[in-house]
Image (cartoon, rainbow, N blue to C red; front, side, top):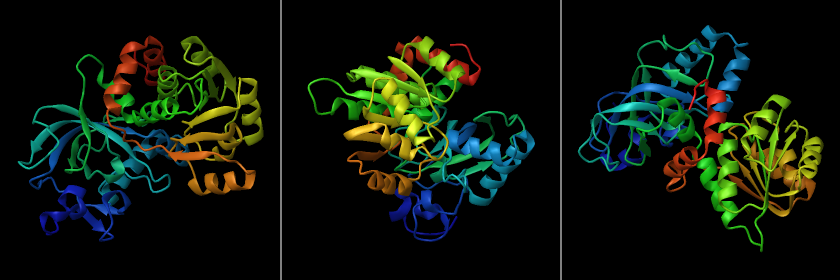
Length: 352
């Protein structure tokens, strides 16, 4: 490991190999040396959860070939010392068992605890030692052996014992979305709750965001999905008041679908994993409304310039994956809603 004093340790600066001076998330390459500093934690890797945009890109670029997808993930981790998709700029998160805790670590973790990291794999030093031999390459959750390093400023949650690990991992991967959605809806100015549209409403972050918006007092919930299969899933769940089918990449068609569903929306939450949805989300949102972009496929340049070109007076928020209390809030939504559990089961192939 490169030698520096301890002042950069909390931020992980000492783990940055290339280029020097940037934070770990922006680095091209990190040092995954298993020897930890006093305020670090080493985690024995059990499972990665690739974010949806990254997995979709990998699947597309490898033409769906599972062996090619596996090889590409291994190549990225070997070259970069972290799982940081160079095309999407995103990564995901992981589940593992705490192996060693430095004496100065402020995270409150103990050896033997099974945890989920609540920081992106794009800023987590990572080494894979089993060649991903147990992964079939056909889904976002990746059984794996190896280790990861957490810094003093990292965030992690001990996994609950009452929920299956694959379910907990999938929920914690997107727990920032419902937390910020609830905050925005709660703070919405007006006598009644806002009309809320969620693009990708049948997905993981989308279904949780619908439930969070309902809990926060939304007056009307519109779930937007890409096809009739997902529409049937979302309609059965009852999470949305209206379900509409639209291609979120078609701005005019999307805005019209949201209007048919009871819009325009005062709050639009973008939870899709494909690029090109910025203009449609803006067009579907009422003047003075708010658009929350949670998709890692979002181009924030396209969003900013698109709003300007449309003369749209909307507030646009980047979906920060961290909100205080977000992990427990998302897990409570899952515990309290069989509809959410059913949607997650349909996506993950489980039965909860």
